[in-house]
Amino acid sequence: MFYRALTCGAALLLCAASAHAEGTPIPHGTLELIARNQWITAGHTLDLGLRFQLEKGWHIYWVNPGDSGEPPRVEWQLPEGLTAGSIEWPAPRRLETGSIVDYGYEDRVLLIVPLHAAASLAAQQPVRLGAEVKLLVCSHEMCIPGKAELSLTLPIKSQPPATDAQNRDARNHDARNDELFTATRRSLPHPAPGNWRFSLADANDSFVLSANLGHRITQAVFFPLAESQIENAAPQKLLPVATGFRLTLRKSDRLLKPIARLKGVLVLSAEGSYLIDVPLSKPGAARSKAATVLESTQ
Amino acid sequence: MKRSTLYPMFLYPMLVVLVLCAAPPLISAAKIGATAPDFTGTASTGKTFHLSDYRGKYVVLEWHNNGCPFVRKQYNSGNMQRLQKQWTSQGVVWFTILSSAPGKQGYVTANEENDYLAKTQAAPTAALLDPTGEIGHLYDAKTSPQMIVINPQGVVIYDGAIDDKPTTDLNDVPGATNYVSLALQQAMAGKQVETSVTRPYGCSVKYADATH
Image 1 (cartoon, each protein chain N blue to C red):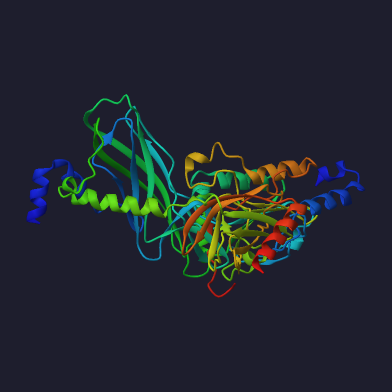
Image 2 (spheres, rainbow over the protein chains, first blue to last red):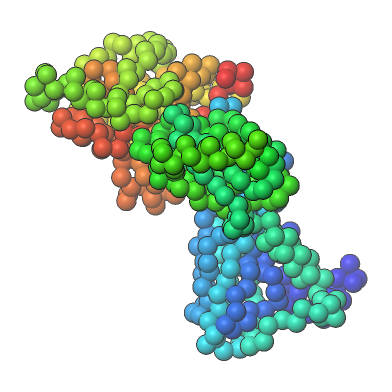
């Protein structure tokens, strides 16, 4: 406590940040607006983060919520020269409730939003970043809507913060945030490596996603970005092959028109998560692709 | 129904064929273009209703959970009540269906439901209590407020969301395209329902744990 009082005395800004460390209450959890750095740098992008902590048994939703639910929505109140980008969604989890499957997050999650600062911004006194977050928090038994008014005050400077350890010693809180942002960014879905090959075939009531990664894959889960393409609640049947895998995804029974491509996040437990966008093969092409995969597995 | 005479009878089989061809070769309880499965439901008033008694009328099924924020958006804005009044006054039969199991959000006793209907000035034909989830599972209802529209021939012509704004925000009600009204308007005008299937956004139906 004494140490904390000293720190607060030494840096008023840090004190203000610490006061919010517990976060703003939301239904069955807390939410906090945090920043990766201590200040905004003109002409640079700063990662802001919405840090959710949820009680056990409660969840929030991914950008495609699945069969039910609603993703959190943010409205920013920002001074001129600052613009917020879109939420960078980490890979979600399958949340099963009886016969339906939702996509979302339990426990803790950081939703990163990049904040772009115009180069023309003059260094000045602290500015207030405001965010109104509307969200839906659900358990298997019920859903509760929530709203949180968040804010963060940061100065604008012309030079980026130093990243050396010497400076970090003076701001433990900031260093912890930095690690959280680094870890979260690392876990975000990345574009799939250029030498990986994907194809998608139409197989009556299913789509078959074939992947050639050059090595055997024994665990893979696909999360569709668009709604009503695949049946969320249907088990995804994985067939490991020597060069990758084949994943059978049942078509949504709400899919009335043929789809041109399947876009979403592929989670490979060992390798991380990848953003993929696979065109549906034409019937003839599908056969030859399938044949290639079969040959390469033998 | 009056409008159905606008179309020569020989066109009907063709329309049905068209609808069936458009649907995927699947699987699920209530399908667009298929006959709506019959059910018997007990209303909060104690009265018994059989779906099959309403051949010759349009029927709307509305899945309800009074605690669900998506449902509250419709009721707190008065939109659901407005729709119920608008369509029942034109001869449409409207069943509000409560498939929440005892102990879960949205489960109510008959008396509680009657109080709710009075308080919110709701005007369905009946509110059917379905705590076992039998009717819900028969139609594979996933969410509240999922909506289904059945035509006078007993065929499902719409299954999905109430509108195109999948949010809990009351401000989104005025600008929304209501799929139920659109389906009823188009069908009554003898037209094909353009948007017959959508993702039924909302809260998951709070079924009893054992029944799936």
